[in-house]
Length: 318
Image 1 (cartoon, rainbow, N blue to C red):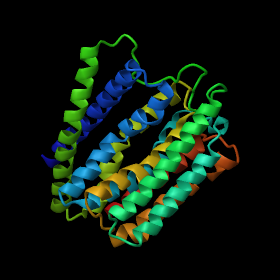
Image 2 (cartoon, one colour):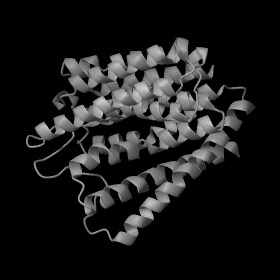
Image 3 (cartoon, rainbow, N blue to C red):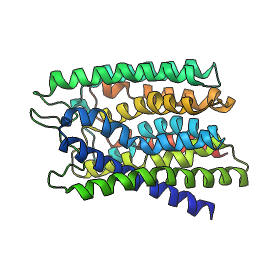
């Protein structure tokens, strides 16, 4: 029953997150907020809403191991799985994406988090440091987008307007409101169901909350990114995958953990400190050939990345 409840909570989270993004995007554009600003703020935070709500709910439910495991596990899954499986289906032409500066920023965010983890528990002062770095990232992203929107970049911007998922200029106001209400109600509801079920699963199998967060919860919250990238690969349009993964990992570390620590302290288990955060760093460094050497992610790389993720999960479960 707990497994079914976990799946139900995850499904509610994913549907509610999608509804919130659709409603927020169309509302913002209707009241005159530029598409560029929407893509850098509302969409970015909206797609991270399931992870954010899970982390906050986990802290409130005195299960902070799930919150931290969710972030670390999601970052590992984003690199190894979200890039690996689509690459098996179709070569990802990531060589066309200019992501060097964002990748370096991601490594800096990873290093900052690792340093703070050694001063655990993570509390509100650590959260303010992470959120300050997030502010720097958002400022850089906004300035970069303004400078290059006429040229177009690997995010697919054109001179007039960004192509935003869920954008419907003809969407009536009542439908926008329906999406917003569904998202705002569904996100906390799904998070509460998933956290309770995951905690019960952890206890019944003698597994730590951190392991559940690193595996079940992290895999589930990475499903939207994986599904999107798989569909893009099948359409031969997966060039944006690398940039999306880098951006998602930055938000996970800086926004989600930054906000969650303002709700309550998050201890860092020895297992995460001595193993999982180093796996997260190693998986990030795997991207160097694609970022700096201009290599595409072919099928052999995809098999290798996916195999590494499977091996990582097996190590956790043994």
